[in-house]
Image 1 (cartoon, rainbow, N blue to C red):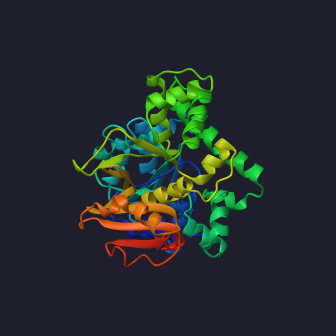
Image 2 (image 1 turned 120 degrees about the vertical axis):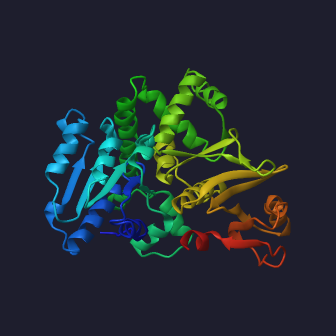
Image 3 (image 1 turned 90 degrees about the vertical axis):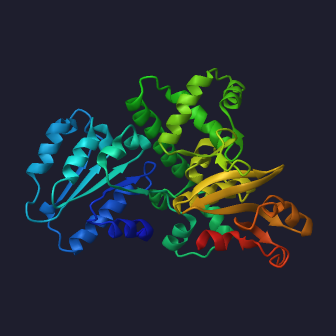
Length: 396
């Protein structure tokens, strides 16, 4: 079994630290497997079976365990009094007032709590405030570096192409054939749209939601607004309203199928509410929806870089300085790293064009130019701009 060490280490480092650990990520991203691996580690630490409770609420909507008082008493009655208790609650946001139940459990001595969720509704309302102390661990499909490690392959154009057309959902490693892969990913998408959205809203139109997802996949990495999207759907004989599309867009983001990339305003030093790009959480999403193979193109490479930055804990925006675009503005711990992605630097002119936006920024910003095909050493032309080849960047 492939061990996703980055995530497992986060769980181990937060073990018994009095916070509620919350794993959140799109369906089938590997959260359940990670928790299985963590529990295996607990068993190697000689934690007894009666110290571990696991409840998956995904299929328990009509069960007594979804009643807060019953759930709390059910768990308390099974606690080991003199030893640490490890509690694993999957999709617990289905339970009304679940945050109060979690807070009550975390207030007891000798409890270590782990939650997992496939959408952001777990953070709705005052849930985080009620639960008080939390450690949030976003879980993404496997990155390119994880793909290489799992398959013991080198970083090159061939393996990157394979990754783009296999994707990072852990189970895809077991699937053979493009058609089977597409069927699997479509099943993931359909489960999210039909099951999750139907539970959240009686207004759900699965067909329209799927068409909206298809539109976003076709236009991944390009600026979109609600009016443009409505017009685009109308061009395919799908009539809807701005209000409906906005509602469904929020769902696709809440379900973590698509992530927004807003624009950072360097003049006012704030994030703009307009000029938003959307990227699918995994390359296989685009493949399954559009039925077009992914290629080593500018926009598709931007997609995996964007998701990779998010998985490393960055807040990620697009940027623009005057008339020159900056692909990504990545922020972590108050540090800004401005990244330009250029597929090829064939000559001096293409280099100058690529760094036009970065060159206008002050020295307080870290500046990086990522390219697939560096034609020569550009390091001496602008020492403030670090030039990195894509494969090195994706595997470090």
